Length: 111
Image 1 (cartoon, rainbow, N blue to C red):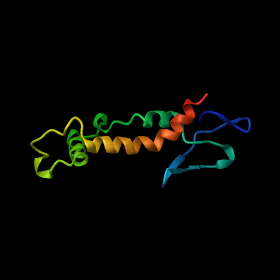
Image 2: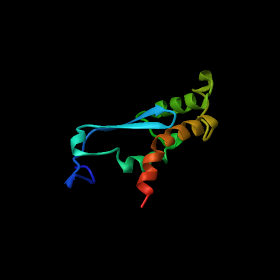
Image 3: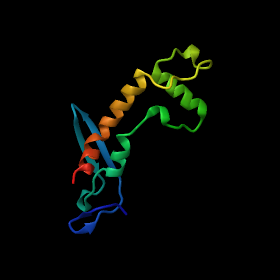
Image 4: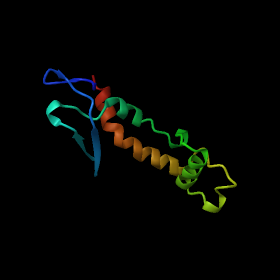
C-alpha cells in the first residue's frame, strides 16, 4: 500500500512520475488520480543526497567508465587511470539531479 490518505481512504501504491518541465517547473502524473497520490516524499528526501561517485553499477568496469565519462577523462586514459574522487563534472551532475528532488524534500520537511 501507499502512504497517506485521500478523501478519508488509504492511498494505494501506484505509479507516480515527476516531470521536469524546465524553468524550475515540475508536473506530477499519478496513475488513477481519483484515488489520490503524489511523488513519494521518501524518494525526494533520498534524491537530494545523490552522490554520483558513491553510486554502484552492476559491473565495476561500467562504474569506472561512467565516472570517467562524467569527469571528462580522455577515453584513451580510461584503462590506465582511476576516475577522480571528485571533479566539477560530478558536482554539476549531483547539483542538477538534486534540484529535481528539492521541492518534494522541502514539502516533506515542513511541519
